[in-house]
Image 1 (cartoon, rainbow, N blue to C red):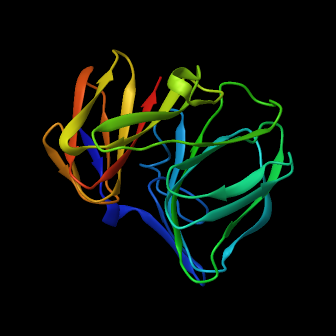
Image 2 (tube, rainbow, N blue to C red; image 1 turned 45 degrees about the vertical axis):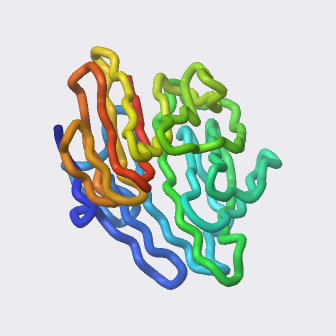
Length: 227
């Protein structure tokens, strides 16, 4: 198991934004951490009250956003938009080009989110926006985005699955198929992955096929099952 420790990540900090980067992003560059398989970005962002990202472009990237605390307001050039809270997940395909903005919906409280970028399996697709609400429950693993739209997940243009796990008191398991790779991100609280302890913000790569056991009562983990 290869572990990316939270303290070793890159960081962007100014005014209303405090962002930790598991992989190279913006002005932060680490040749050893340019992504993992099709997973290109994991940003752990805290946006202060009233702060946010003005309208800016993206292209040829599948962007999945998971709100962990607070409320995030989104608008984009497809006409998509809404306010995301814990349980809400956004899947945006930038395709051949999209413009969007993201702001903290609250004027008093910060918002914390995990934003991830996955490279698509085809360039120049039509941009699209989707937002769904999921019922995350302790002891369950919920598939929120998937290349085949399985289990009610939002469809993305890549052979990948994004899952949210709440281990609860008993822990949870994910079965990894041969030839695939799994990135486990400790999003809220500490977890253990097959007995290996991770602190909040740590990430781990698992490539041994079979059952991957995740434990940590009160925690939230985000899993990326990748071709």
